Image 1 (spheres, rainbow, N blue to C red):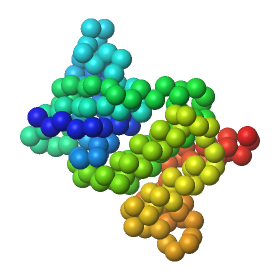
Image 2 (image 1 turned 90 degrees about the vertical axis):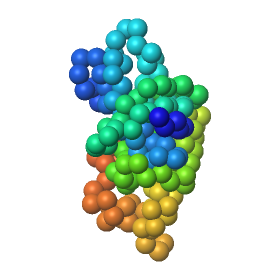
Image 3 (image 1 turned 180 degrees about the vertical axis):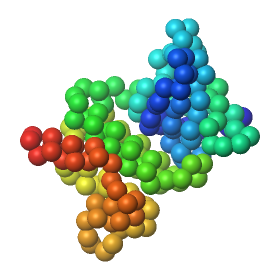
Image 4 (image 1 turned 120 degrees about the horizontal axis):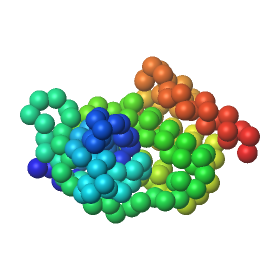
Length: 178
């Protein structure tokens, strides 16, 4: 069993009662887990599997493939401020989507974990701004080693990843309306 601190970045329904949960961990990187029975009323995961939550997770590694079994979750940071307005949730989601697109499963990077944690913690207590978006992109491009000189991080990330998450356009449209 592996125990690690992680941030929940995505959930997908697997069956009527189970979820696929994507985490980003400092030690393990992108971790994809199955939370069996998570949608049952008396599940031990009830109330613990929501976007942007941070905590200690325990997983049993898969023998084959990259879908591991989630055994325990202990939440330490609920980040309730990320749900105060749609724009805040949208930016937090974009941060998670961008990071997930840039990393490989089970390759930890403390710098990337710290960037995501700081970005989400900032949004938990502050209003989303274009400056925050551009700062996150620039720091991510630096950590990935793809920032081209003094150019825009957006261009470097787009060249490296092929495409940026669609939510970026929606986010910029809404931020320009502030």
